[in-house]
Image (tube, rainbow, N blue to C red; front, side, top):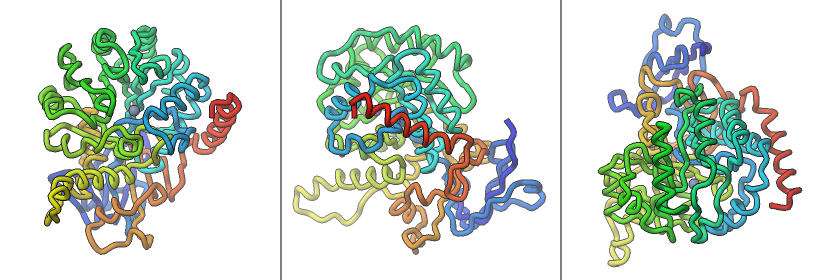
Length: 451
Ligand SMILES: [Zn+2]
C-alpha cells in the first residue's frame, strides 16, 4: 500500500511515547503509512509531503475502542432507557434476528464511520449477529470499506437471548463457519488492516462444557478470544474459566464490573486484558462501578470501549470522562461513608487518554504497531481542533480535551497514513453512500416491526 507522505506541522503533539512526551510545537512525518519522524522535522526530510497545518490543535495517537458491537451502527439511541436485560429483550430478541446481510453491511459501515469520525482508528468489533458465512463476509467488507483498523471478532449465528435469562445454550453450528471465514478471509490471521478473533459466549451465556469446546476451537484456529464477564447477575465467570484451565494471555474480558479480588488476581496472573465500557456499564446497570481502578491496581492491560451505541454515544472522549468520574466516585466512597473530605484524588485525564490509546493497544497485543506516536509505528493519528471557546484553556491541553472535546472537534483522522477525515468531514470513498445505506436499513428494520 502506498500513500502520499504527510507532514502534520505546528501542533501540540502528545506522543504518549515515554521517551518523547509532549512536543508543544511539533511535527509528525508519515512516510509509506508509518511514522517516520516526530518532533522537529527538517524541510529536507519532509520534501514532497502533503502538509497538514496543526497550529492550535492537539495531535494525538488514534484511539482504540477495545469492545464495540459495530453492526448496531444504525440503531443508535434505541435503548437509552433500558438495562442490559431490557436491551436484550429489544435488540437481541426482536431486532437482531431480522437482520439481513445488507443490514449487517450498512450497520457495520455506518458504525465504523461513527468511530473514525470521532477519532477511533482501531476497533475490536464484537460481531454477534452473523447468521451465516455471507453475514461475516458483509461485516468484514464493511470494516474494510470504512478504512478502519480492527479486530473482527467472529461471534456466531445470532445472539442467544434465552441465555441472558438463565437458559444456557449448547454450542451452535458456528465453529465450522468460523473456520471457513478464517480460511477464506483471514488466511494468515490478517487481512489488510484487519485481524480475526473469536467473540465467544463464555460461561455467562452458555454451559461450561460448551465454553471448553469454544475455547479449544478458537485456540485450534490460533485466534484471540473475547468474552463478557462480571456483569451483575452473572457471577463466577472467571472462576469457571479458571476451573477449566481456560484463562490465558489470548483472552480479552469485556466489562469485569463485579469480579472478586481473586478473579482480578487470576486475570493478572494469566495475562488477560479488560475492556471497560464506563457509559454502558453505569447506565445499563451492569454493576456498581467500572473495573478501571481494579484493572490498573492489578496491572491488567485495559482499554476503553463504547460497547453498544444503542445505549451510549459513539466516542471515547465521553468514555474518558465517564470512566474518570466513576473511578473517583468509587475511590471516594469510603471517605464519604466516614463523613470525611479527602485532600487528594487519584488518576487524571492523561491516565484516561492512556486507556483510550496505549491501553487498548496493549489489551489487543497491538502495542508494537499503534497506541503512541513513535517512529516505525502505524500512521494512525488524530488532530483535535482546540481553538473553539470550549477547548481554548489555560491548563494542560490534554485535561481540557478530555473535559470538553467531542467528535465534532476531531478535525483530521489518519489511519495507516490514509486521511479518512479532513477539515472535519469524512472523505473516504464510502462516506456518502454509507448514510443512504444506513437509512435504507433503518426503514427495513422499522418495516419488520422490530423497532
Ligand atoms: Zn458487549
